[in-house]
Image (cartoon, rainbow, N blue to C red; front, side, top):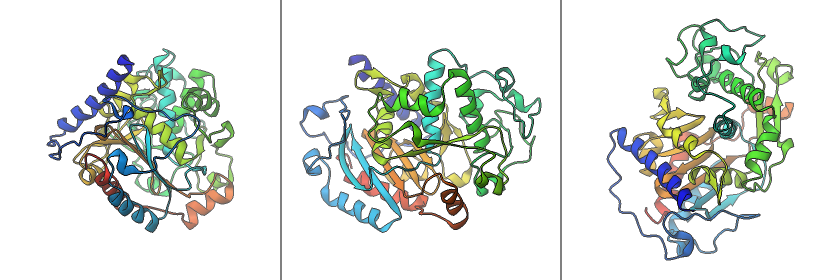
Length: 393
């Protein structure tokens, strides 16, 4: 337990170092002492058993019930489908359909990141390996010699500079995709589903296991996900009508997760605890700690967010950081899907949308007719109110 606690402190320290390295002063608000309960002893987290149990009175745990009510009122005004608020592993509040499996959109990338970290720690995958060394190409658009120099590390930071059509690529990203050959690998950031999907192919070749089965056996089962099933991960491929209609052509499929808010909360708690679940190290602690350290600058329109190892990093001077007064990491999906981890507050917040499934009808409806959406400003305001209710708020 002592070693596990030191890993948790190391992750928190890594986030604090990143927060200070960005030239931002520490938040001047004093940290409130948590209630005198065994669960809230320093460096101690509770990990849920078969199911989450929400506290009856958040006020007994140091939270402001009045300010939580304000946050819930915001939630009810938005297109949100579910929210969960977890403090040191204790479920403080849950709103909406937390057990319903919704399309996780790009949350899938953080899920894949955990699997890649396990593969690297096992010594089967080297992040310095290039696409050429790994035999990664694309029969739809063969890679150039320069593109084949991209490393696994570049894919993890979305700096591979392979500007090719991709499966499950949103029209907005297509519009901003640079000209092919505009940059060399490692030079420039661009959010590329080609790179993320190729990373999925690399993982499956390295491990010899499919993404659905690997996630079930290596992450979902060890942390006790309540709702996840292997069949909840679906591959979108270039032969699918939804992809053909959008000219999304690549040999690398996209693994799409249908997942519940309460299972996302477990995944967030896993990363808050430095990859540990109880006495078991599920995702390597070093891998989790690298996320802020390995993060890179993104685009100015993203308002200070950085990107590293398939997680977004929001330093204290980012838009989210300014809203809540703390650095965080977050898994993010289109239209407002979020798993936010705030190490300085021992906090996980999950925000879900009723974004439909992965059937052809759902894909086409979401892409061409629209779907529920919560924009960044709305979400940041919701987070501000949640953090204001926190014992340190």
